[in-house]
Amino acid sequence: MIRLEHVYALAGLLFAGVALAIAFDREEPRRLRAASFYALISVSFLFGGQLPAAANGALAVVLALLAASGALDRSKGPAPAAPAGEVSAVRLFAPALIIPVGALAGGLFLAKAQLTSGPLLDPASKSLPTLFGLAVGVLVALVLAQSLLRRPVNEPVQAARGLMQLVGWAAFLPQMLAALGAVFTLSGVGDAVSALTGRVIPVDNPYVVATAYCLGMAILTVLMGNAFAAFPVMTAGIGLPLIVGRFHGDPAVMGAIGMLSGFCGTLVTPLAANFNLVPSALLQLKDRYGVIRVQAATAGVVLIGNILLMCLLVYRNV
Image (cartoon, rainbow, N blue to C red):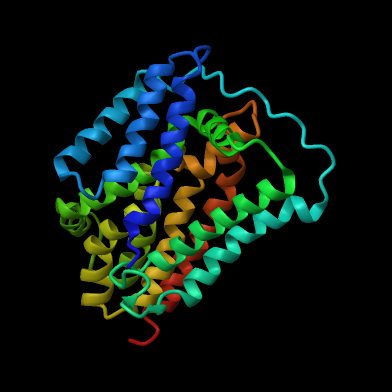
């Protein structure tokens, strides 16, 4: 039976290759620290499930210290790849299209796939079918791209190295912030939010509560950089006890519009690095925060719309 750890192992092997590529490049500034950073990322993906919680926490702290020390700054990166010559549209896009098709097929068809000895995929992990389909799609696309374009065998690893060094620590910020959200939830931050809300706003008014929930999702997402991390905190603090518990609101509407409100915060925070800083780095924009500046007005308008929709829809069946 395939488990989530098997998919993570593929990512771990890739980061191990990136670490080795950096370590053996003597012209790379700070190569030992940079290689150590990606080696620890590899260890996390390969063995994180077997390590005790304290070891995983220590690993995260060391990664943060390496990034803060400038281990990923002023990277040279790999030498530019040789031009591939003329490439037809089919050769260019076919491998790229296989990846989302694999993820979609995995999510739709693999959840209930069976072997003679039992299920193909671990049924305890709801996200595994999509992730496994994505992983298979990536591997098939890699083989197809290599056969169509006839590139050097090590080029995928070198390309991954170049991308990681261009993006830097920001590539791993979403995972760190998602883990922070889980820590906040387990430590009772939701209860603290609920108590604070009761002191600041009139919790006897359902529409004020709905507005506070949407605003809280957006603000906490700005602070945490991840709407998925903010959602359990705000839902435990305001959504479930007040909107659903006290005023009998629709939890499906609350969750859907609440997440959309959180995404409004995603549009305006540099902590959402994969959305707002990575594109600036990849496109080499002069203004590092240019993406945020463009998105800010849209975020405000959409948030207002979400608040209105929440007030109109979440209590419609009461």
